[in-house]
Image (spheres, chains in turn green, orange, cyan, red):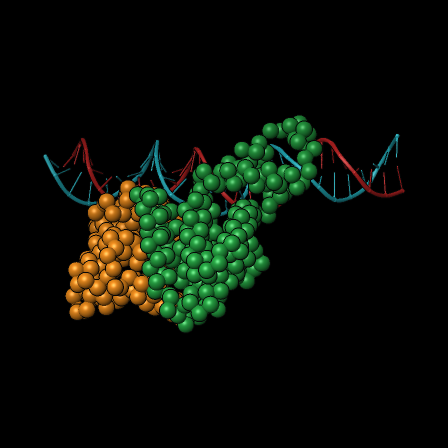
Length: 205
Length: 205
DNA sequence: TATCTATTATTAACAATGTTAACAATAGAG
DNA sequence: CTCTATTGTTAACATTGTTAATAATAGATA
């Protein structure tokens, strides 16, 4: 691609092109993971030079952050949906945990990026401090736990500790699935369900 | 360092030098983590050229693998020790879980390398299939769980599922600590203890 | 209409990475 | 004394993320 080629590319509007880059980046990211992703590969896919991307995103992390935020949007919406539908708070919590796990199992690369890479969310102060869809999702989850406490269903443990425990456990299942090649989908499901059962059994009065 | 300089370095024996590289590598690794580690940095520290390292280790992963194995040696020994001392099997299991968590919290970089990086243990077929200290440690942990089952203390759940659940949960606590900057030592301890309590409460009959 | 400026693209380059190829020089075996 | 294996080295390659310098157009302004 030379300067003559660039002339034909001038028509696109900023927002549309940003969208296009994002979509291409997500495709690469989903199929090749964090390690397989590179700015040059992305540039090749959208048929632009690598530096062009820097006109639309500050750097690699900024781009990956945008991708993750879109996933959290989806996640947060679904979590809210679960909460509004269900009646029994403990059952809602169970559903929420299972959905969290399932979400991670379905989107390992994004989950990996979000939780197992400091560069994107970690380096940005702290997930909880910065306004983000990731933070929103966390807060919705916390509300679900608080509902259970308000209903007098759980042992008297600090709500934040309970949230951590449940998130951490879900976390672990997904990590196991990501990093253990031989951990099958069926196996993951069994372990996920059993783990949630054990946790809720241990948490309830 | 030129060829003349190399002459003075010829005296060292293979094994000793391998040891020396390993120690230097571990130092860098502990202080700078996986991302901060590089073959060139290591070469600079031991005052040899980068290529020399390749005479003693196949590649970067091979070197990091060796470091991790040494940590597991330590870990496995301590786990065996806990098992031989304690009488009550459930209490042994509790100690084992807490030790696992504590080990991870104390050695975040190694833990990260072992469990959150496919390149070292993951790419080597599978941790469970290959003979390694990591595998030994796993087996000791499994025996502790089996002791509890044999004593009739736990619900009737497959031993491998229980092992996974406990390992996964411990895993999660450590991951949280590694990737959340604001997750303090005190907080980690509270969550770790509460999590183990909840799990054992949920697992027992 | 002519010109100036901001935008959008490019190429070239830098520094860092893991790793390999080619080469040098010694130690020890025959 | 000579040959060979061992143990080093330098130079180079192909990546990576990112920045600097530059070109060319679109749109605003005179």
